[in-house]
Image (cartoon, rainbow, N blue to C red):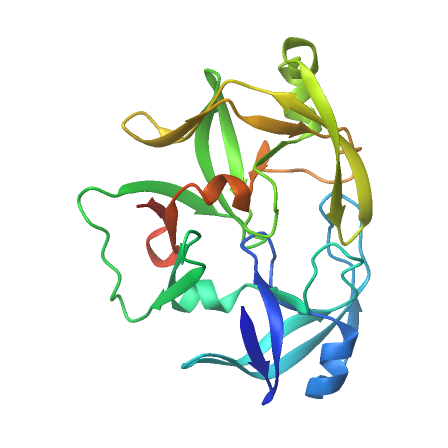
Length: 253
């Protein structure tokens, strides 16, 4: 989406529920007059520390919506995302964010204006300390905790501990290898064919069959994950979805 930062731009920003807070490239920081205040070492997608600058965005404007005094990371995207930065953090705290992938539109509901309809499916999630929503699900009768990550372009990634504990690489056929991108660079990851994914539990769930999943094998010894995998934008794009952080729920329409 197009975002004006400190009156400059617009800049192309990717909406990312998998990021702790927003990030802009050094080029955007320079153009918008954002001063780099300190260096930080957040955990990257594969458990490694990534050195990023930090600063404060005075104003962020998306259409008629504005956010003020927003902390941000400053760093190179390393071709991980073809845009000027990622938008996260306070926009989800202040608004219910509805994404219609089919129409390529986003609607923001403020002041409690969002109300799901009776035919919608509401799936509860926990908001982790790193500001990432995590929900329950089932993959081929196996309970799974999934981080909801719109910044991940794929459908489903399962983390090494979950894959090893359930012997998934032995159970499922490998159908290819995919190159993935993150702030830590590129990785080649195995692509496996699975049968059924249900997001949510029981009647409060939405499901898809014939799911392709990435089985990663990076070293998890340096970080503890509170989830078993990532649910990405390609999977979510089968529906219109609303992120309602105020009520800790993901709504499928």
